Each structure stands twice: as structure tokens, then as C-alpha cells.
Image 1 (cartoon, rainbow, N blue to C red):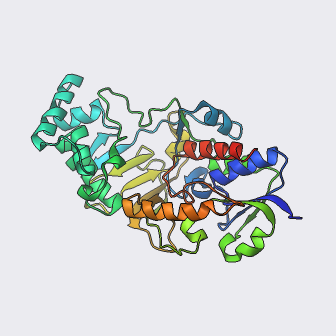
Image 2 (cartoon, rainbow, N blue to C red):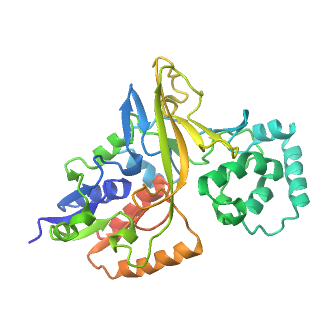
Image 3 (cartoon, rainbow, N blue to C red):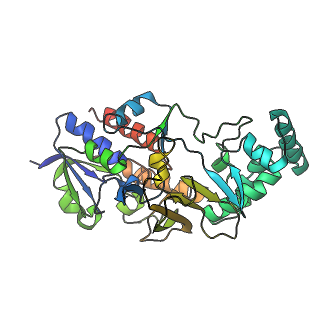
Length: 373
């Protein structure tokens, strides 16, 4: 007899949702994570009364009513609206690209004038079928905005020229001929009051959790504990990289506690020139206070500068590099995974896929349904 029905490897969103559904179905569940905390990359910690997003900014947004209702079982959400700002050598522009952006860039006032200018620049560039990110961006917003607000930022983020990046990366870029500053065009949006860690803790309530527990270092012992394993770590690491290593982009954070109430007046400011070494600065207090409070009653603030870097073993993997080489390697690993009949592979790292939070939760819920829970 195994001690547990399910061993869930990883206490991030996918693992927490699966564990909750399995426990609610009457199964005995053990959750382990090699980190000293639950929450995976959505982990938040309190600093001077401010919830700091330790692994980068996470803003929950979805059009999926089932997912929205689900997360609201475990947290109350504020009404934060993501309205980032672009800083190009001291010039400030609205993100997403909208009429405020076009007015600042070209002096246009009407949507018709903005559309005409974008079309003029697209025609001047001679792009009909965009073959890469650079051409796709110019076809969407014209050359001026590409050069100032996309090119430098994107090349810092991906470590490659835009002409060498696939066009799909930027196809979902919000471009609006309105004055709408809401970056995410989603029905539901917000951030859990008190941070994501509390939300994940509520998901895992009553479930045994072991932290600082590295599954791959003692895989045989952990496998012996449960009838089924739900694995949310890197799929290539599970198979000891036998077919090769999947590539990622990583992010490094420099976080500071500042003795001032307000550093930049916004949650996110992107630095879009190539010379500034960081991609953006996050001021964490504005995720919580947003439009509900000015936040200036807190005398201090916390900022994080983000630096994008090429991933190497030992770094935290953030963004999969979904080019042909890596996608084909992943498919080979997926074939191996399908032969592991007692293991479910799910989540961002196990599926080598960039997931928004709502999509992770939807995937986990669907996975539990397929598992008969």
C-alpha cells in the first residue's frame, strides 16, 4: 500500500489547483517543492507592509468565468488595472499603444489620423507578409513606434535581434485607436488582496506540504510514496537531460527598499531604449493600492529592476525559447513522458509553454477532470 494517492511535485499554481481538486475528491495528497516557500513564481512576501512579487510582476486577468470564480474561492481580488508606461530616453509614452501614444509620437488627434500614419509607415517599409518580429511590429504600429518603443526593449528581453525573432511573439500586441489605457482587454482583472502566497496557502489548506524537498534528488523514494505523480518541473530535467537541454530566457531582479513614499507613480515602467541595461522597473506598492488608495500613507516603497538574461543550468527558467529547435526537442521529451503511465506532466515547465496564470489554472482543472476527479 502506498502512503499517498497523489504526489504533487511543485507548489505553484498548477500543483496547488491539482492538489486541491484531488483532496476535495477524497484522495490523500502530498505536495513537495524544492523551494522554501509555496506559490512558485507567483510567490509574494510582505516588506514594510507592501506585497513584493519576488519572481516578477503577476497581474491576474481572464475572460474565463470558471477560472475567475475558482480563484475567488481562495482570495479577494482588488480592482488593479494594468496601465504600464514606456520610458524612451526620458520621453514617456502610454502602453498599450493607443491614442495617447500616437498623439505623443506624431501629434495626431483623431483615430483616422493615427490609422493613416501607421498605414503610411507600413507602406514605406514595403512589408506585405511579415516574416519576423521586426516586420510584424512595423506592420502593426509603424516604424517610429517600433524604433522607440519595441526594438530596444525586445532585444534586451530576448537577447536576439528582432529580425531573428518569430513574428508570433508580438501578434497579440494591443494596438488601439481609443484612449483605453487598460493593457489587458479582459473581463476580469486584479491582484489578490494580501498577495498571491495567501491565495495559494488557501488552496493548499488541509493538504500536507513539504518544502525544501527536491524530487529529482531522491526520485525513487518519492515515487514509492504515491500511486500517481503530478510533475510540474522542467520536463528535460525529469529525464536527466538525456536528449539535450531546452533553452529559456531568465530574469534577474535587483530589489531595493527606498525611504520615500513614491518612486515612479506607477506599477510598471518599461525602459525601451537599448542603452538602459534593465527592461523595466516595478514599484510593488502600486499593484496593491492602484486606484483604491494613493499608497502614500506608507512612508517607504519597494522597487525591482528587471534584467533579462540567457538561461543557464542553475538559473530560474522563465520564458521558453519556442523556436523550431526547442519545440522539436520538447516533442521528443513529450513522447517519453507519454510512456510514464503513473505520471501526469503539467504546467509551464513540464509543457515547455508560456502560460498566463488563468491558462495554468484552466489547464489544471481540465487535467483533474481527465484524471476523473
